[in-house]
Amino acid sequence: MPELAQKAVVVTGGGSGIGRATAQAFHDDGAHVLIVGRSEKSLRETAEGYDRIRFLAADVGDPAAPEEIVSFALREFGRIDVLVNNAAVTGFAPLDGLDRAAVHGQLGTNLIAPLFLTQRALDALEATQGTVVNVGSAGSLGLRAWPENSVYGMAKAALDFLTRTWAVELAPRGIRSVGIAPGVVDTGVGVRAGMPAEAYDAFLAQMAQRIPAGRVGRPEDIAWWTVQLTRPEAGYANGMVLAVDGALSVT
Image (cartoon, rainbow, N blue to C red):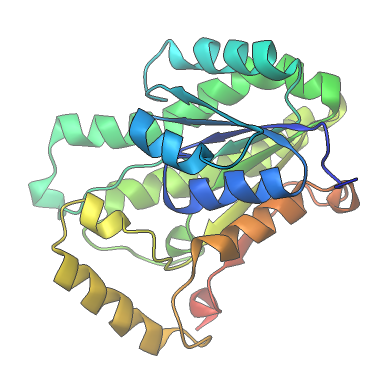
């Protein structure tokens, strides 16, 4: 049987990109998966042809979302083995162009939502000796700067801090906390953030020339590693943030 058979996984931001690829990868390894996102249409597209993927249309930034998501997962599966905090939004602006409402929106989705969703899932994760995977960004690792994407970057840096802190705090309960930091991945996120398609394609082409691997990432590159970090064989990995970026962050 597949190694993750009968395991239950929750993936936020499962309607596209890395979240979609991650949900499908967990399914292919035998798991039951709940995907969460704001667009029911996109969620349906992710789940199409995958009989063990369920979906819930919800905004993870809504204060009621943690209860709704965890309760739905427990009704469907009776357990939660893995929580993948993947949902994120971005918006490009220099410091003097930041809008307060937009900043609160980014922080609500990218940082506050995973904080309180994980809090609500703790008892279920303790019961299964489960794993939290926080999806950060290689762009916010180390001493790097990220002009005009400061709010997104600071939220991801803070999420990495939560990953390390939860690893220590939750270890006595048998819960692991790990992070994955994707590099430049072709998910269409730039277009969704308002960048013209031609400009986004040009950005990807430019970055491919800078990345030692010689290409930008694919959502499947990140999904594979996310699944590996939740396997029993990875049980001694805790508190670490794995960069999957074609070596860009070490250049």
